[in-house]
Length: 141
Image 1 (cartoon, rainbow, N blue to C red):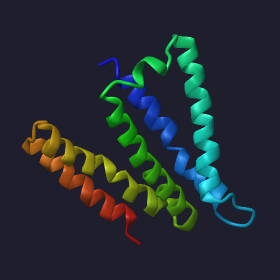
Image 2: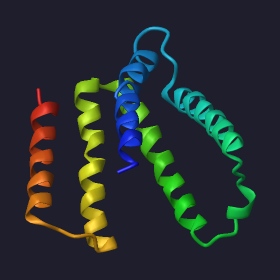
Image 3: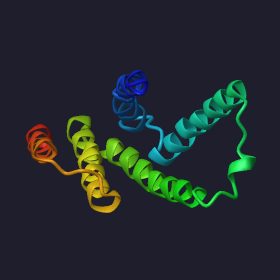
């Protein structure tokens, strides 16, 4: 379970993204959501380049791999998702936008079961159903 510390770090870090983006992209003097995407993800790129340099990784050897098509597809969906998410945060309350956005966890689970053949158990079905109920309850007024 060497992935768990990374998952927890992602949870903690990402918990502050919607709050900070809402504050930065709403109200008087707001930064446009598309500018926020560019700046915040530009910072992500710089930090990723730094991590790659420290770890001795380079992009070149991977560009011609067939799997890169999946990475590019993921990047395309990421772009649409983040642009839409930041726009939604600039227009609506974090307490509604974030739970709706968070449904990607449920949809990803369903798609991975359908397309990747991952196991579907009664426990997973209950978790998916409860997640949907939770989002409806949290996002409702």
